[in-house]
Image 1 (cartoon, rainbow, N blue to C red):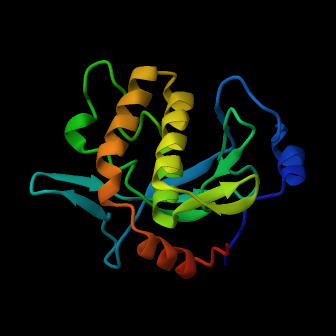
Image 2 (cartoon, rainbow, N blue to C red):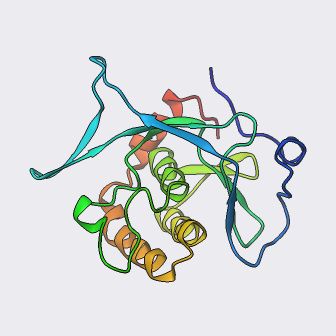
Length: 187
């Protein structure tokens, strides 16, 4: 079953938030659920980072009643897809505990699923409609979302620098189109 984000009216009625106003600072509302993603044998899926590190994969499911929404400063409201796998922002494990920076997946539990959805599908739901994004746009949304999650400009800037360097190797329009087709996301 494929579910789509709510309309602004539905969201306002159920979540008690206003969707289309401009805001001085970005913020999140709503919620999603993260559970360990399991393979066919019931074991937790992992992503390997080279030979040394393994990162658990989580299954993200957006709330059907009050979906995770990032309210950007320009009045845009961004929602990830309703169900997909996430690795917590693709941050290499050695960077998770850097002093003075909050780069681990648990430091930005709302920003990283949004980022992973953008990179998996090549876009996100903006004000209820799926729109394609460029890699640079996706990286910029992540920076502002991390700022909303952590309130740390240093963390947001470190994440932005990391995605500027690393995201060029994983942004793949063909894989994104295949993922959209597989998961029933219409443009």
